[in-house]
Image (cartoon, rainbow over all chains, first blue to last red; front, top):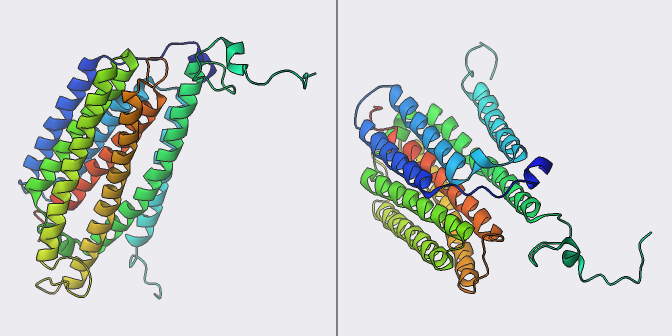
Length: 104
Length: 229
């Protein structure tokens, strides 16, 4: 944080907010429109992919993380890594049940 | 060593900084960054709070994918899309409230905060309409739950998760509107300046976080089950 303390607070130009807003609205319309097409398993992939894109835009620009101190960025990454541990290790149990002929 | 008799009060004056600078920070920038870092640490705990529910949803959807798809088709995709758009507009107005504070447009702060609160109210109103439809259609888990076909029990799990996740999200919206009410009252008094508007900034982080939770709830609950039979 020390090297950032010397710098002035970063004011993001308003046009960045309007551009991000436009992108979020387009992505929302896109994800709803695509849900009417039958893409098999790709429906889930596309819907979650668009959700991740939208969330990334909100985090980086509306929440100023692109301009935040490295400490904040690393903390957020750590939180997401812990979320990944929660989901991946839980699913590694549930999705592999029945793979081996062991007594239940 | 420290002179015990020295007056303790004018500590901030010693820094030559504004009166909002607390004595344990060296500069306003350091104080602001510590506050937003603290908010982010809280939001990380919130990520894992909601993360547990998202994990539960994933496990049950894996186990009962057909029933979850069938149940999710009972949600109103038009209302879901509308509410997603409402929340995105509210995130824009929140970002503009923070922007107004950072450039010193005091009236604009109040206007954008009120707009954000109004949009949050619209979202909750639409949610209330959706909930009342579910009560009317006997889709609320409990003794009066009715679902045609062999998947009724699994569908009840879907609606349990639906009400828990959207309910927890709505509770966050209500708290957010409460926080913004305090901000509006403070902003009207001219409390926020380009040098000091940390409460607006960290409340903005909270509001955007709640928007992000909905960005994931919307496709998972409303969209992805439409073609699974």
